[in-house]
Length: 379
Image 1 (spheres, rainbow, N blue to C red):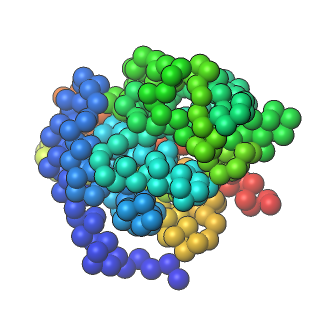
Image 2 (tube, rainbow, N blue to C red):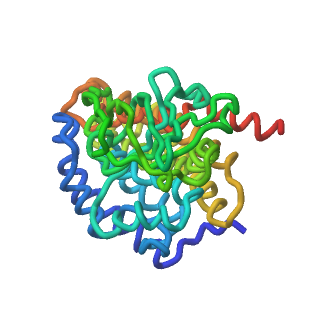
């Protein structure tokens, strides 16, 4: 049975992440948003106190924590700064295919070093002409002796220029459709890897988003994730682990927006009293609070379900779409409550609104999540 009571260890983990968000992330968040500078120092600090790679298994020296614990951590990181948190959490999506489908040897080769030092990884699946429709990817991997030769371009790759290695999805047999796709680990420093310019995004600006092109890049067959033809399955199963944590980050952002709004509404006076005492504003705050609570519980359920060894595809999609849409709505309401000040970059809610939008886009758009839910309902 799904238990809402957190253990002492889980409470301590959440407190640790909360303190890190407030003391380390919040103070530098405006700077990184303004400049787009990658938060190397913050990431090193987070890695040093165990807030990264919490899902890595014991077999590679990792903590072996579940997706539920990941949700507890990531909500607080999202409360601190979603741009920095996304840069940190790119490791989760990149490593998930290796954890769900890679051999023990492959995991030790690529994941164990990330426990020993603060390394980064990137998930290379999206292409200029293939976003939501992953089956349309054109990147190819051709077997030549003991190697595969990879050619193609990926787009919107988080941590594109700072990752130590990439998980790359490529077509190995076009005739087999998605069953002809395979996953590979590719070092960023491999010959033929070309990283594009940093994209100037609307929000989450310090997240390093770039194109990555592979020109006759040779990788050993031993760096194939699972077996040939299993890449699509590994890539999609990864989302069951990571969509709950993405939802959790959206919850963290929304909670920040609500907290800022409450503070402002209690101080701002209009028509002789704080605007929080006007029903129009108090009802907005109430709606924000109830939706955040609902999203948090959906997120916890999605994380808990997969930690029980049960399939959570539906729960993960429900949590992700509800939390993403909720975060956007709450951020918009926060700007509205601030009024003209909310539209100014001198106040925090403007950034939250910009940061929130991408939750409805990355790791599966809100429309794709609805398709998944409908498919699960209809069989």
